[in-house]
Image (cartoon, rainbow, N blue to C red):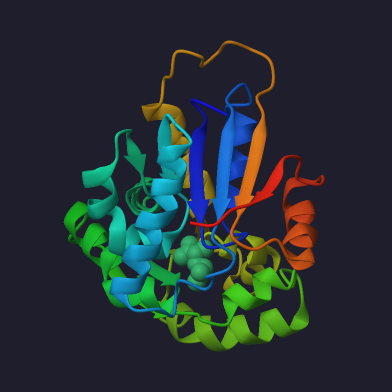
Length: 261
Ligand code: DGL
């Protein structure tokens, strides 16, 4: 499939981005790569995350994509400059759009949650500080959230309890917004919203990056009408992936292929 929008994540999380993009730009073709054999990225070292991200992007370049969406915060945090340097096409990561979305809502006390890698990189904290030095920023890694999202427990008492433990210290500082700095986390929105309460906005990477793609990407086929195709490439196709993909996308993924990077 040539000229598709290429999207990659370590696993199912980036499907939240694919879903949001398809809704806004249904006429485009999409090639989604989930590096499911090497998931999780979030607990790995910087060097490994960068290597995996480059391998994933190179696979998409070989398939002649027209735009690269890095639908993984961990890969965006550690590898965006390296990806941009080697990419023959424009690259959009999730961090800057997430920061813009948080600040656009006027929040002055913002927390970022993400994988251990994303939080350790300081990428969100630095981007927020650069964009709005007056905004107070706290951050916390939430390593149990990815397995809970992959388990499909986005609306579950166990997730509420774990979220309470991770988020309570942040919430007690009088937060106005939490950036869900991991593309898996929107899958936990029901539990997270319950714990955060109505006064705290949850900023979703998927929506934020979709806005950035829609604004910045005006390909020749934009607005051509019709419905584009979606191909999913995985480095490991488990039943678990299919089950969660079905829950996120609302139907079985067509064109699913197992690939070796
Ligand atoms: N979805 C990835 C992210 O946005 C994290 C999942 C993982 O740890 O592999 O950071």
